[in-house]
Figure 1 (tube, rainbow, N blue to C red):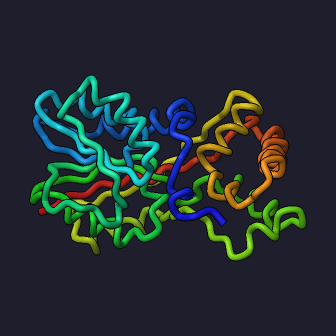
Figure 2: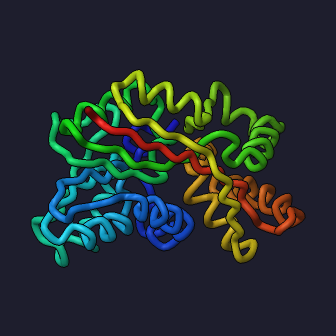
Length: 265
């Protein structure tokens, strides 16, 4: 079994190159944020910093602290951004459920991260505690029926005789709340002016090779870490790609995005 430090790590170089869909969704979320330009913001689950850079561009007199659990992600983000933005950007390795901040931030921005956090009640309390009075949360993550088609195919494959032995006791690594559940959790954590909504975000990969690399790196890394043989890992992903080839459109992923916003009074 992989140890916890392995599970939290990503292939950051590959993710930086492959995360175009996540970045495009995040830019739409960022467009909803109204900034003065001098705020102190938290980028919660900053990854390799592609959207952190956009935040900093919109904050000529402000600063951003990027937080991620993955040291690989933070190292890549620092390599890309520290030279350009200097002391206006800092990176901290931390679990979003246990942020080491108390009323520090004017706002929290996050995309494509919260669904990887196992306890959303604890997550939202941690975020609320990190915001100053009058602070805001603007976020998006996977939710509702996110990737339902791929997940059902993956479950069937895991249960087959070739792979079942690797997945005894396995639980999905994601939390995909619906809009109503997310709103209740935000209010319970103390947020006001809560708004949540779900929207489809069908994503089409260019070809079989791109589909396999994306699924392997971005979606199913936890699953594949449980298969010790590299050849079997490739067969696992190839079986999913074979089914995806017959979808309409081929090699598409049925993403759904959960939009979240709230404020601290």
